[in-house]
Image 1 (cartoon, rainbow, N blue to C red):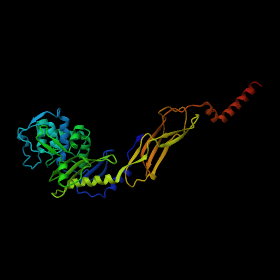
Image 2 (cartoon, one colour):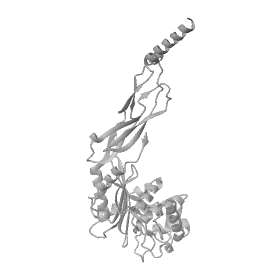
Image 3 (tube, helix red, strand yellow):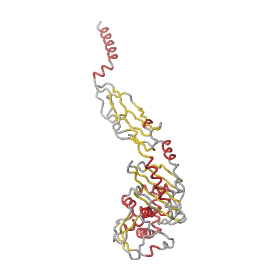
Image 4 (tube, one colour):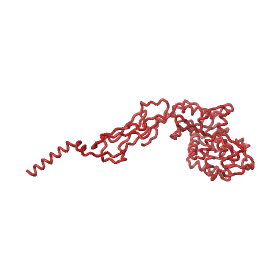
Length: 395
């Protein structure tokens, strides 16, 4: 089977169908992670401040550079210089407190503690500045050309920018790291010495504003005056087995509404309700029956080895599915096992969605009798000519 990209027409249909959704956030991008494709966007490539979404990169770089997350660290007040003056969110680390790298990783990502972030970066790289260099090098390595960090906490600074699409690409990459993924998906965490229990900022906000975020399985919130309310999240549609990733920035700052979370709920609910995978071809379904030549086996039937699905909204119509074969019309015994004899185009709404290779599973058995039957006229003619020649020679 040769998988091809969904056609441009189908792709833009997905994008355009959802433009009716109105969200408060000024920047947004939604990925279907089953296919790693964008299915909704709003100013996804525009430069934006990303606030504490920065800590996605901070945590990823930290995880990749820590040898043992159980190593202990002694907290020093000098690590927090400027944080309280900047009104940065903290988890309340104290001078002389002994913590582990794991404590600081959870404190950074799920509770967005700038004090945990600063302690983490200084202990890994010697200074936050050195750690930021590691972050920028990682951004370059990942091809994030519009992403630039000047600090590891996400505080507003000139030059600290990204786009929601580059944050999404970063998060998609980071989630491949199992340790990062475990932290990102956590709703709570108890410190190694049991002195503190942390809760995810999404969980806290959901309770505060009485919002149902049960479909969101991992998240990172962010907030500064410049970035507004931000959210990077992953949601799982259990009924349809689809995982989504949404990144939004610049939602309205309000003490009455959590616009960034409400946006996520609205977008996810829309897709959970209106989109799913539909089978274009079922596993075992007959694709093509090809006649044979010079064999007692009169024909060979080729069936689909896998389901072929299309991600679509609820206007899907199975009557618009077509299968089109291109290739040999007859199979002969000289064909080798594994040899490609043609392809079947799987078409929906006149657009090719997938192309299936048709290959020889078993060699076609040769039959001398069938060969003679098929060529009886030639044999009669040749035999007649031979008789004439013999007759003339021996006359």
